[in-house]
Length: 176
Image (cartoon, rainbow, N blue to C red):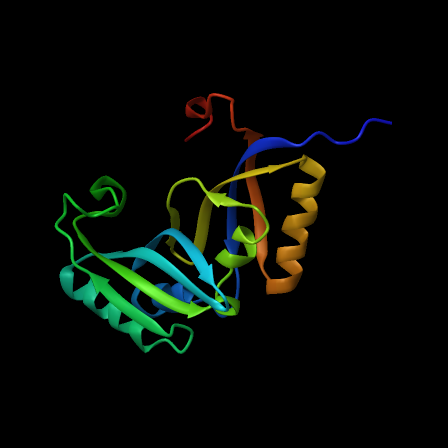
């Protein structure tokens, strides 16, 4: 019997998990959030995000909601001009604010993926109560299923794998 073969996989998933600061921001303000990845240092996680909305007041309200969240230790606004912003205007509209956040790693689901070998392959988008994440991971497909199940159980999360393909495959034809 042949052992499963490890391969570099491109994974697109949709997820929801309780006790998430982005869910707070989305539910309380209707704003959206783009996540640009996180890193961990001990028990702390750090993440750069873009909060966006329908107007500058809407974005300010959403940033304040994030600052007021008990799930985040610190929110710092990152000053940038539209040309310097790391979020493409076409994806989010004209009103946005880049922020740098710090939180205990157990307060977010990102570290659960990153500590298991997943790498963000573009911004994750949180909008209208759902999160869509593009990821890369080096493992066999059966291990992928087990890792996703572990995260679901550990974080009481709902995770749907929307797409799993070899990363060396032309993914432009798969995007919609």
